Length: 166
Image 1 (cartoon, rainbow, N blue to C red):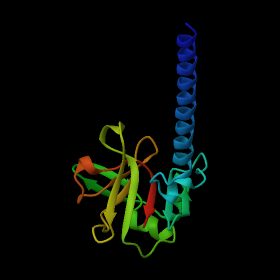
Image 2: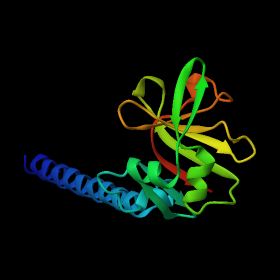
Image 3: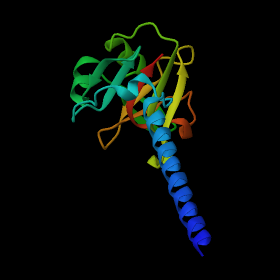
Image 4: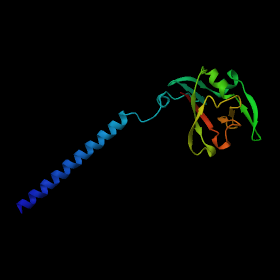
């Protein structure tokens, strides 16, 4: 009997030791994940914009400009265009970048929501593809929508909140 009791105690001690090792390993994995690069961009680590900011321009990992709707209207000016039978009114995409101090760029990511506003998207665009027909349309809800006759409607970015320049 004593031998059986000793094996039970030894088994419990082994299970306790294994449990502690697993807990330590799990803790190390969590710490490593917290300290590692999670694949996010530098823009993900910037201070959040103010409450009335509807658009942030990030260039080279720094905030180039934070725009309110009133600032856009006053500083950039709006244009009108009819795309697919719908009137689009707002600043030209290129004018917003220029007013933000971004004159020379190759690639940008426009972050917002896809059609139906049920999923976030980031549309990568090349400077070679963008022209004077690309508009940040001001919607009835006071948000911005990237539109262009060059973009299929399902590629339009709704509720644009950030443009990241690489």
